[in-house]
Image 1: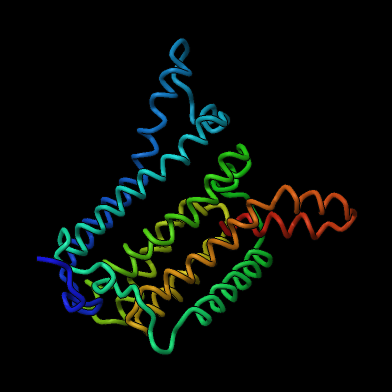
Image 2: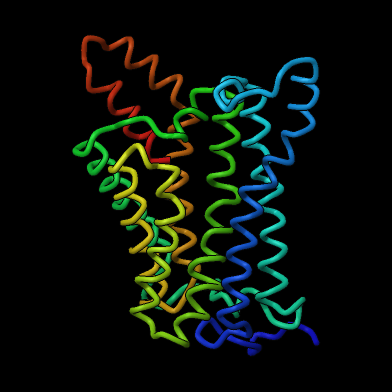
Amino acid sequence: MPATASSGSPENPPWGVLSALVTWFLSTAAVALVPVLCVQPYVAYRFKNGPAPTQEVLLADKTFVFLFVLGWVPAHLLTLVLIWAVATRLGKYSLKEVLGLSWSPDFRLGKSVGIAISLFVMAWLIAAFSGAKKTDLDQILDSSRAAALTLAFIAVATAPLIEEMIYRGLLYSALQRVIGRWFTVIVVASMFAGLHVYQYRQNIGAILSISLLSFVLTYIRARTGRLLPCFVIHLVFNGVQSLIIVLEPYLRAISEHWRPQPTTGLFIHLLRILG
């Protein structure tokens, strides 16, 4: 049956809670396992004549870190195919219609961009007042320029779309029919933030920032009944961080030029931990 505009809706999706949870689990597994599979040939070749490398040795290997980060790309692409299969029932429904990839009459591009910028400023202030301890993400950014740029690309090209389709798309749409809108906001926002807690475990400011972002995105999904505003907010939020990663060598050069102003270096580090 061809996809039609009337086949399903974000509030009455053609999938249930079980399908949404299974998709969420498989997407999480893909992000965890696919990068590991991608680096196995390199590890086998690099350490074939020596003892098995420790985690510290691997994290110090720039090529290993780069290949691991690059492995998130096929993981996200596999997840995208899975989302399409579940959401559209293998093409029987319109992905745009069932996920709500359209604007709400009172919530369009300008408001979405404004909220994204406001959230970024708030996240920066939270990080500034709570400290700027390094996270696992900082290790990736410090490993090599190639790893940092690849991470910046993923943060814009695939991560916002995949995460919004999973959390505010499949999970929210299915759960709100069973437990109601506002309880679903709490559950989905907590699931999204909780998945990032380990990644940012060294930095309470980063955890608070991602929790704020998660709650606002899920609230907007409930308020508008649309996924597109959430995606654009997430995209712009990540986009600012990615731009800073790309420009960091130049920002650091400016920081060195204007010494002894110590706040510039702190500013760069605070921006980096928000990634």
